[in-house]
Image 1 (cartoon, helix red, strand yellow):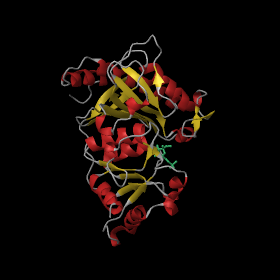
Image 2: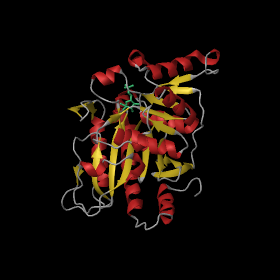
Image 3: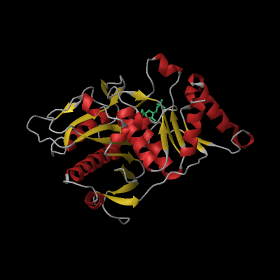
Image 4: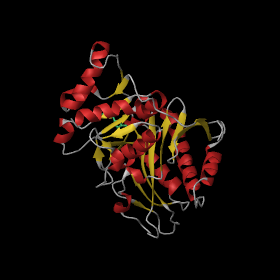
Length: 336
Ligand code: P6P
């Protein structure tokens, strides 16, 4: 593959290496690209069109939905539900699994997605993104039920995200490394701009919402205190901190220059009867697949995310991901 090739050609070329490929996977990735291009167009229009602000509704998480959350979800359904590449869909924005209209052909794949992650940033013009995870559908099942989606992250066929930032980029893994594509808006194509991303094993940059400090468990407090102690402390080096409050932006920075991102469990989260803030199926698992394929690591602080046996499509987990040596250090602090 050469830098500058289109996503379409990249997918067709990649398909040649997939035994028994029928073109369905190619079609599905193209449908996803169309959805992301449409969302990018709306995100970039911002206040020029009446799509910002709240939709006046809540999602399954009990969070205020932004208008663009709802619109992005509809764009995904429209792009994926008609071409016969998927059997069903699951979204952060929908309580239940989405079954295709009865007259629509079913395909071999299930797609789980967060159509607009970090949407609280949309009103303040900070980067947001779309995250997607692709699983194989159970063969011959007309309307797969939630149980069909509850597969560990290691069974993902592919995962990716699209970041709507200064440039719109799609980042994709099909299990053979991580490649990045930048959208050329002039002719509406994603062009390959980065191949075979590798996350540096070490870093001097951590990302965590420090306003939760008083709720943190001891291992998290220890790790962050050591980073803050800088070169005179146990780490012997100074650290920088970032917090965008948009997971896609944090992961993209880490793929680009290394780092560690943490959304750990804490006393506030436990008091709500939850295990974490971020969602396993359409945030942690796809990002975990991408990060591991780029040589990084992704755990809950105690165990590898991608081997968790899911109980529920909207299940939440603690997340520690990024530069392998840092994630292993944080995990070792948790596991004593
Ligand atoms: P907080 C966005 O709402 C999100 O799900 C992730 O994209 C982001 O990393 C995190 O939550 C931000 O959480 O508590 O800082 O608003």
